[in-house]
Length: 452
Image (tube, one colour):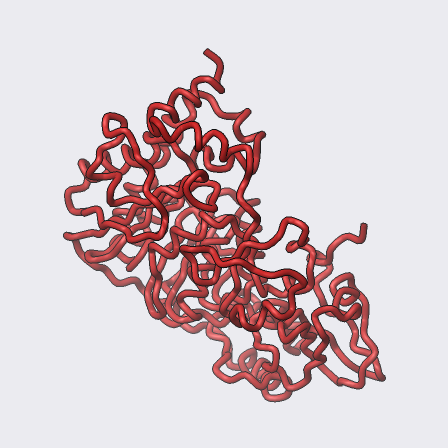
């Protein structure tokens, strides 16, 4: 029996009469989708700037499908963080988690950052969002996406799950465990993923998922919730993983998730019916999504522990240099450094825990750096500002060629002086520095696209 036949037999046993519709759906991937970044404005701001119409995603208020003809990843608005390109079904786990402003939230397996930035938008910049990724290269991508979307209250870590478990016992209000999986939900979108699948893959992944869920349970405070999610169809990684978790963790209960998504008719000899009826499966033959599983777990019993907070460590002299910059060039109030990592100054989220001994890629909002006894603002600060958050703004239309040229490193003729915020369509793009009729380009070289 080859691997393709083994996969077919497993899914056929799970779906029974629904298998033929499912198999046909894999031949027609659902339309591409994006999520509007509400930290920078809603769909009413974005839609008039796009050359195509958007169609709503049923389970995410800020999610929309767009035509395949639209190159959504190659626009100025994408670089400005106006939206995040995200598969529609991947938007459901954060919807189920329902993070709120002021909460302490952990995204345990966070790269590349779609769910982290969705959670950040829901939290509206208030509370502490810790985003962790164990693979260094993927953690760097996560950090970049958190920056692009203008997130201010996130701490990006590159740590093992076990180290976090030791460091943050019974601490978080909510945890998203979007676990590494066999990726069967991506087969329609990425046929190469199907070629890599073997009959052993689900069980190998299930063992890894067990360890991740156990660590998540230890980090959750009493009364808190975990959303466990995968992008696979495998029962071993989904309903059966939840059944095993509940058996091993009697302090948890499974909470039914309400959803507009039709529930598949699953064979109860393959998955426990009492588990399946409370979980959500987005199946490509029943909804416009490539595939996702989601379960909501609440911790009934246990404790809640506080953490030592990060102590303000910014020397007075460095704070004064920032204050001088803010006085001259910022209109937005409430931004102030409370953490210094060498000469780099950051504005941490209120209630940020002590980060000593952790591999920190991003701590709150990176404001800038002290260079030769002066403050130089960061790109992170620019893209986190509203379109009118600076004293000097060079406002361009979203389709202005100068905005595109700016991303490639060009300077712009203008009478603006000093540090100037470049915007496109009302979205902040980055800094320039004006003098003698020219705003010199300060867009980071490492972020500039390659001309083709």
